[in-house]
Amino acid sequence: MKRIIELIKYSFFGGLTTVINLALFAILEQAGMNYILASSISYVVAVVINYFFNKQYVFGTAKKSKKESRTQFIKFISMRFISLGIENVLLYLLVSIIGIQVYFAKITLSIVIILLTYVANKRIIFKKHEEST
Image 1: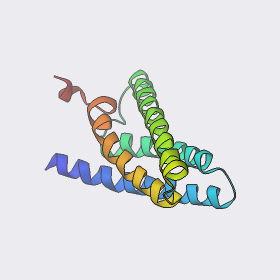
Image 2: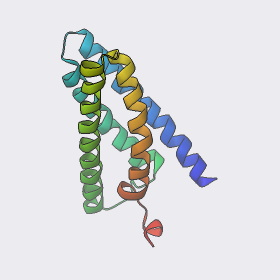
Image 3: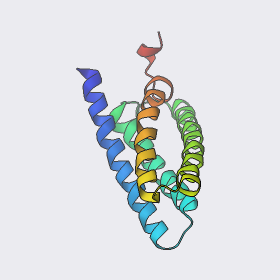
Image 4: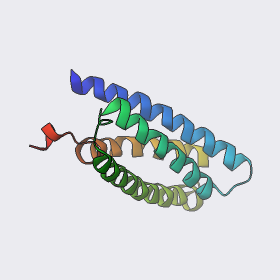
């Protein structure tokens, strides 16, 4: 039951930050910004917000020491920059090479990234001490 509640929280806050990501992307892209740059900026903003949601409300690791929190944040940001690179390459391929509509590609990739990063968040970034044994 605890895992189901955690997954529901992760989905809720992931969905919320995805809405922030997509809304900011749409605003920047409609303002004339290159879609890859708009995607990168909106992704980074959403990632920072998502980190605090995950730390505080989803995985309950807000009470870690400053050193543990710093290490956790570095792991989180590193993993997310890797996923940003993957998303941007795939976004370019889908939009500029294959010709898929930019918003459809962005939404689809955002959903895929959420699903893939859950495991990394759970098992690597926000791992609790009792889970590491």
